[in-house]
Image (cartoon, rainbow, N blue to C red; front, side, top):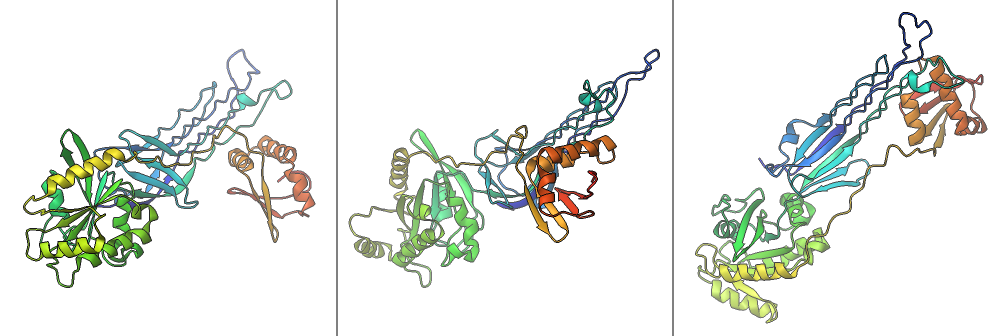
Amino acid sequence: MFYDQAKIFVKAGDGGSGVVSFRREKHVPRGGPDGGDGGRGGDVIFLVDPGLRTLLDFRYQRHYKAERGRHGSGAKKHGAAGDDLIIRVPPGTIIRDTKTDALMADLIHPGQQKTVARGGRGGRGNARFLSNRHRVPRISEKGEPGEERWLLLELKLLADVGLVGYPNVGKSTLLSRVSAAKPKIAAYPFTTLTPNLGMVTVGEENFVLADIPGLIEGAHQGVGLGHEFLRHLERTRLLIHVINMAADLEGRDPIQDYHSINSQLLHYSEKLATLPQVLAANKMDLPQARENLTAFREILGPGQKIFPISAATGEGIEALLFRVKELLGELPPPEEIETVTLEDPGVPDSTYEIIHTGGRYVIKGKGIERIAAMTNFQQEEGVKRFHRVLAKMGILAALQARGIKDNDVVRIGKIELNYTQQGGK
């Protein structure tokens, strides 16, 4: 099956926790702190694998989690870093954050990589808190949680040229005629249900041709899976508009079909509607085709170049392909799509926001949320250090100015604390 869309959850590895440990050896009765740091959590990385063609694998697995970092240990031994998680995707995969709709990656080139979730840093062991004033620190940090997010994956085929037209106008037959692709072909509408790609050679040059399933009225609104098919035209630089000039299907009219397909393209995307088109008047080997072509040309006018072809017999195809090659040589290369980059986790962020609802105070801010997540509230020194951080950042004063009272709940990230005037939490 061909799957070109998937929604998945990714979570980078949590950092390992630091430990509280003291050197204990014979003849060293007052050994200093030697607790090691935790290891960094693994990142979640997408990698372009040219051997893949669809997003089928994501139908069966939707949750992906990188390895967490190992905890530190005594003798200043740091925990090992967690392994990165590599997720392989086919070329042409676009990745969006479902919460913000931000475009995180546009993966085109084989071997291209993109980190979409960073692993948490390891917590510090008590050896890192040694100072002239604090000779016996009994404090360590928990590992920082790894980033997590829901992602929407969309596959947009990487093709230079797209075949568009109504069902059963001969697009698949044309693709099989000019390339080694073997799409399913039959004499009934909707034979093609999934896009097909073929490599076309013209002289010494090659281009990729995509056969998009036939469009119908209302395709731009999703009718007949229109959105699923139109998506694959967005990367193309040129369209071959195939028209059934024989009008051998019941109720079909070449000029009406021509305007209807262009209308679907325009309503879906102005960019698609402005792509250069080469008109291929197909099925010229059938009765009525010559007469219909004459009327078609009169309506469109002499300024519109039309290539009469027969995908079944090969008539006129060479001239069509040379025109396509000529136009591709004149067109600029595809534009690179701008994507967001993950923020540098090493940059401190002291900004915050306080939201008061009832007896609950929610403090939002990346810096304070990270500190709260890494604080070990089971350690008395850890609680005192966190209180000093709140005071230094001005959060305590801000809470008091908002009228906070004893036993009011303070939420920071996933941590909930009860406020007391004595300075504890």
